[in-house]
Image (cartoon, rainbow, N blue to C red; front, side, top):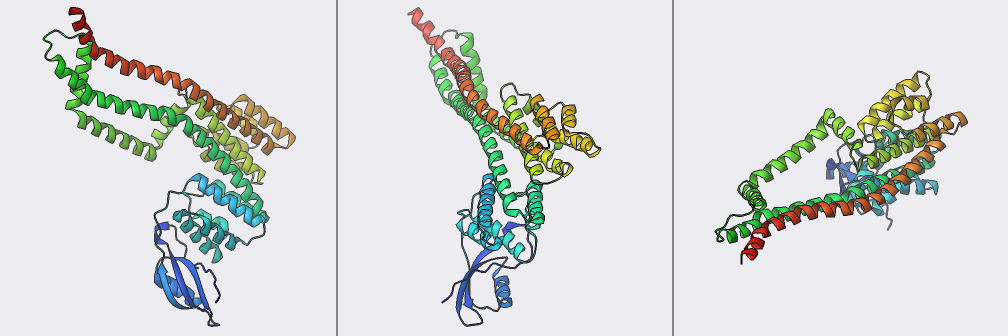
Length: 413
């Protein structure tokens, strides 16, 4: 008995939902029993593809898989690293896809890789197969893969891509971790305040109604706020939920809103510097990677602006690209935008003069990635006492306001 694995030579598909994984069994031309898996749109397509390969199909069964997790940047980075490692070890490209797809626990990634493998198997270039899935493989990724295919150094450029993605994802993770603590504390504080307003203060109000004495002003204010929240709680919840949803949709769909948000992020009093450093780190890391891969500078700048993740730097990159395409130097164009640190501009100048631009940009990226690390640690130390003080004043003020009548009653007694 022989066992083989066959993947569908199907027509290109751009939607992952139309492709399913089937297990099949049959006999080849030598009457040997063969088994395998195939990614296809349906059972009939599986049978047709196998008949063209000379296999008499005896059984086809769709594999039932659990819904996989969403594909994230670090998943693409891991796949790229695995693919680069196997190609460097001499494993053929199609077999490398098989190994990575089988070894991944996320069915969505397995489906994605099987689809790409099917396209490559029918003669599509790897970069063209990747371009069919722009949600996961951006222009930078596809351009570098295309350059690697043209130069015959695909394994080297995949390795460089994997390193790039790992570093970019590390910076994103550190920024998110810096934001997670204050956001979590604010959410918990909002829940605590809601509980106090809806249940605790009304209980105090019922007790105070039997006092028959005039209540202090702070107590009356807090009780008035509680009455408002109790009466209009569902309306407040709907307004906040709908407001958050429509704000998110406006941010996703409106370029003007994105511009305002990106500009505001850079000007935030505490987090603005962190956003600024991480954006500069991504910008320099992306340009360094593209230039080191042999992509011309003007073409490299096409991918750099979008990879920065900020509209201010995207527009600055467009201006830089225009200056460079007309013969200007990169450093002078960067300096004219007034959005890059002096150190980055100076290192770019040195790189241009020494012919080691990719190296100097990489050093600048290393420096700002390290600065992000330092800033995240400093923010954790700085924010903790600030949040404690603010929440202490807020919740403590409410508690004291509700106990003031009891204190006064004790003084009278």
